[in-house]
Every structure is written in C-alpha cells, then in structure tokens.
Image (cartoon, rainbow, N blue to C red):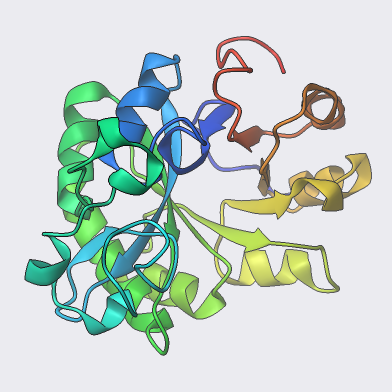
Length: 249
C-alpha cells in the first residue's frame, strides 16, 4: 500500500477566500477568512490574454466585476482596472482582481496556505497549468507550496511536467470508473470530490492508493460530521462563520 505524501495543510479550507462573506477571489476575502481563524483558502487562477496569472472563477467577467466578456481575451492592464468588489456590496467597491503575485505576497506576510484551482480559459488548459506552476514555484519558494487542483487533466499534466515538485489534486464531481488510476497517473497527492459522492469506502480506497481526500463545498454540520467520521482529510466550506477551523466539524 503506498504511503500518503507529507500533508502540511489544515483540515478546514475557506472557499474562494471567505465563502459568501466577501467578494470571492479578492484580497478582501482572504483577509475575512483569516479574521475568522482560517489558515488556508481555496481560490481560482486563470490567465489573461498576455498570460498574467490572476484570480477569477468564471470564464467571463460579468458576474463578479464591472467588465464584460471572456477574461482570456483581455490583457492584464485592462483587467487590472476592473472593480471586483462592488457586486458584493458598497463597502467592497474598488476591490481589484488580484494577480497571483499579489496573493503570494499576502500569503508570505500572513502565513495563509492556498489551494489554487486551475481555471483555464477556452483552449488554454495546458498553457494555464504550465504558466501557473512555473510562476507559483517562484513566488512560493521557501514557503509551504500551494496545492494545485483542477477538473482539467490537461492542466494538471502540464503543471506536473513544468514543476513536478508542486503538489497536485484532481477535482471530481463524481467517482467514475478509473478515478484512482487517473489521479495516480497524474502524480496527484490528493483528490477533491463533491461531498455527496464520498463515503467511507471511497475514502478508504483513496487512502490505499496513497491519496489524501478533500471535499467541496461542505456547509452543513451533519455532512461535516459524516465526512469526518468517514476519514476525510479536509473540507472546503463557504460557512466560515459557522465552523470554527481549529475544532472538529
């Protein structure tokens, strides 16, 4: 039975920085998550047209900024001027889209650990994995590295080929046939699975393959207790004001 790789990450992880309490994927969100005691956050990284890694969940800008259209079609100087906070409330007006570099600087000074989900634009799966891995390796040199995760196997394969030492996790909505082989073939340290798809047997199978198991997005106390009892290694949650991160779920 393979031994799981060393695991430096805490059990509780704040989804997109602070769940619903602040504009997602902004520095304001990371500060809010940390103010609630969270030591690790999940966020989404994509590339601009000029290959600047920055934080955004959607392929388009419309939902969480005052911009419009595909983010991958726009160069960073235009993206840098967008308001990424006003949609969430007036007190966040003027919050900007963070670059990966600005997030790394915040992490270096505050001690925040990160799960970076690779969110490639159309046709950019491999390139996103390559660029983000190389940039992250430099930015986090000497620090606990971020965990790179993705639903896109091409992104994870490219990240592995670019910087094999960075830990990776395969995101899965369900456990289809061959999920262990896929994760292990990509050299992943973990899988991150939609919570309803997990039970004790699935977590045991992952552990037997040397994989840690995380779950998204767990917002209910009963579900957190079920997964904790099943042997889960970590939970990603929006409910950062409901779960105390230093105590059991």
